[in-house]
Image 1 (spheres, one colour):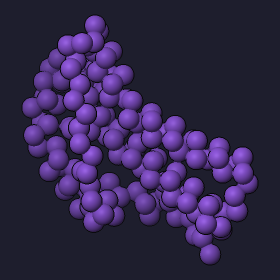
Image 2 (spheres, one colour; image 1 turned 60 degrees about the horizontal axis):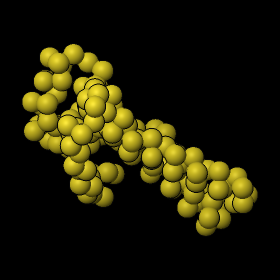
Image 3 (tube, helix red, strand yellow; image 1 turned 90 degrees about the vertical axis):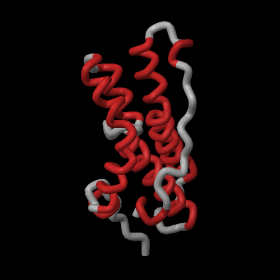
Length: 135
């Protein structure tokens, strides 16, 4: 589904890692910010749903389900350690310089790897995890 809808619309956020005192920790914190934001947005949508007791079959309940599904999917996809996704930069922060160098060199091919995995259905989690029927 991500392959058909449009993957890669987001532009990378430029970060000058030289402005961060501890480069390893800075790389981990900056890279995990988007993942954490997606998870927090999904949790906020769920809390809003509980607070207002939306009917699961009403328009608001379905909208909350979609918002949660999209944000959890984006967080999981972005956490995959394939460059240029943030998971690879988090892995760089925790791994040796040798692994970081390998991931940095692989970054130019990462988009093609992701497209291939999406096309093959390996990264399509919608049928496995989000099979909620709204009737």
